[in-house]
Image 1 (cartoon, rainbow, N blue to C red):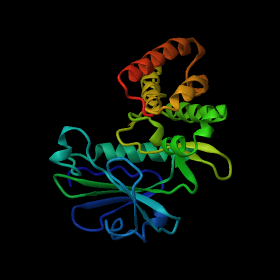
Image 2 (image 1 turned 135 degrees about the vertical axis):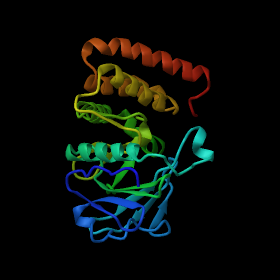
Image 3 (image 1 turned 90 degrees about the vertical axis):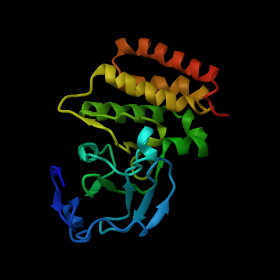
Length: 265
């Protein structure tokens, strides 16, 4: 293979078979010495997204394995093959960095197979009792009346940006509410994440927050959530002098979504 992945702290690099590289956390190196479980193993989960998930048993607890698939124009030609594994390595690095700060599920492994086109699979520890915010909005809309949820979301997003991680697809389905023990919000599905040594710029933070607002606007419940939720999120994520202009920008985008009929009933 043409690329040699960098090894994050706490991981080891294995070569289970020809043209296969595996970065795996040390406690699972023996269990997964032959590579990640075959596609047919474990329980198939349909939780949205392009790749789908499989739940498998590990010595650390239930893990979720995801095959990376394309979106965009190439998805019909190369649905799950990539010329480079750089993007997947960035996702792993972002996950490790955020997990160290209790902001994301624990990454367990990155497997890259084939050459010159790569198949990519990632594994991470399942968070017991966690529910993504999109599903929460459908099943338990009463939670949206609790301002504390917006503050939790805002603190997580702000801490992620302060850690130097930019999330290009920040939306309700990529935020997990962990309700067991102490309640917290985690970030997931970091495909395409940018990882830097400095905090994310204010302009980039605002772009990602606007993406989150658009995700909210797709639900009819946003009629309520838009008012309190955005204010609670903004109080935690943006300096006071930037909130008014951003609020105007987000409100204009919300009105455009309603005119175009993009808000679900």
